[in-house]
Image (cartoon, rainbow, N blue to C red; front, side, top):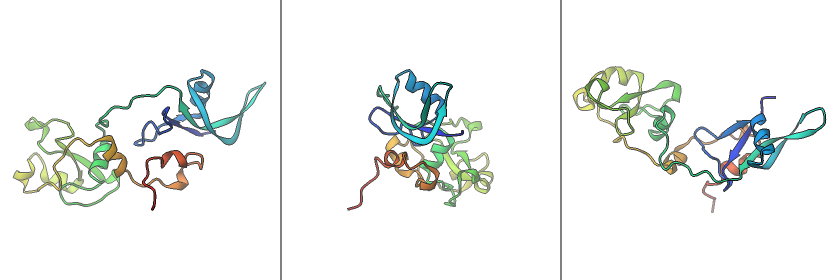
Length: 181
C-alpha cells in the first residue's frame, strides 16, 4: 500500500499547502495509537495485524495546535509561486521544471540569496543577463522581488487537480476557498 494521510492542524486546516502536509499511512497509525491525532476520515482499505483489522486513515487532525511561521519558507517552489511561474524578465510562463532562479544582484557582486534578491527566470534570460544587474543588462524586472506572506502564496497556488486527491480530503483542501454567491 502506498497510501498517504492528509494532516490537518487542530483547527482542521492543512498544516501546509505547498507542499501539502502528508504522512505515510504507517506514521498516521503510529500517531493515532500514541493519541497525538484524531481520526477524521478513512480509506476503504484495511491494514491487518494477527489480532486486528483497522481502516487506513485518510485524514487526521493534530490534537495540539501547531503555530505556523508567519513568513513562508524561502524555497525554489515558493519563489516560482510568488512570481506566478513566469520569467520576471520576459514574462514567459513555464512549469517549474522549465524555470531557474536568478540573483538580481549577482552573488559574485555581493548579492544575497533572499526573497528581495531572487526571481524566477527562464534559462535564456538567465544566460543573457549573466553576471550583470538588470539595469546593466537592459532587462527590467516585471515586479520588484519581495517577501510574500503565507496568505499570498496560498492564493497563488495552482488549482488542485481533484483527480489527484482522495474524496475525503477535498472538504479540507478548499476550507479557505471563496464561496460562490
